[in-house]
Length: 242
Ligand code: DGL
Image (cartoon, rainbow, N blue to C red; front, side, top):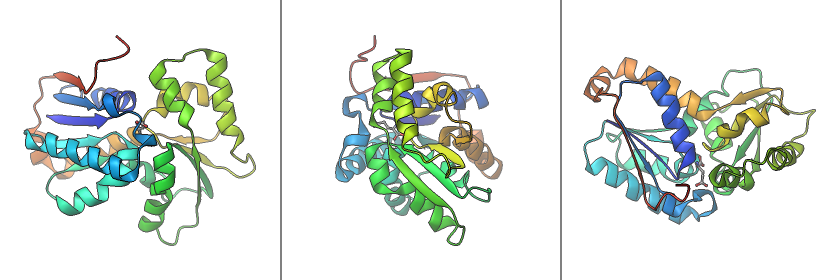
C-alpha cells in the first residue's frame, strides 16, 4: 500500500501521476481538507499536523508515504527523517530540487505558498546539496493559485489575469526555469504554458521518477506493495465540491 498525503487537490494530482506510472499499486490518499490551506498556517501548526498524519499513517501498515505537499515537507520532512529513518517518506520537494541540479540554469523562479516561500526550502535544499553550484533561486508567493484550484474558479479570464500577475513579478531578462513549488499548481500548467516559454519543473512529476529509481534499489519495498489497482480516498471534512 502506498499512502499519499496532501491538503487536497495537489495530492490528488500527484496520485494521478503515480497511477499513470504504477497502475497496479494499491493506494490510499489522505487529504487534510479540514486544515487547508497549509500554506497559510504557522510553522508550528504545519509541523504538528504533518507529524500527526505521518504518525497516524505509519501506525497502520504502510510501505511508503508520498508527502505530496511542499508546505508540509518544508517544515516536517527533515525532523521526521531524523527521528524515524526507517519510516520512509518521499517528499515531492526533494526531487523538485534535484531537477535543478547540473543544468545550465542561472536563474530559477519558484512559485509556492506563503509558508513554503518563508521556509526557503527550495533555495536552502539546493545549496545544501550543491554548495558550489551558482544558481540564483527566486521565490514568489502565489496564494491565489491555490484558491483557484480549490474553488474551481475556472473563469478563463480570471485565471489568466492571475497567472499573468504572478509571471509579471518575474524579470524576463533573468530567468531560465520555473518550479511549480506547490502540488496544486501543475493543475494550472496548461494556463501557465500559454505565457511562459522556458522550462517548467513539476516536483510531483520528478517524484514519480525518483520513486521508480528508489524501487530499483529497494525491491523488498516494491514487492511488499499490494498490486490490485485499488484506490481509497479519505478527507478530514465533508467534500465541499460534492
Ligand atoms: N499542496 C500544498 C503544497 O504543495 C499547498 C496547498 C495548501 O496551502 O494547503 O504546498
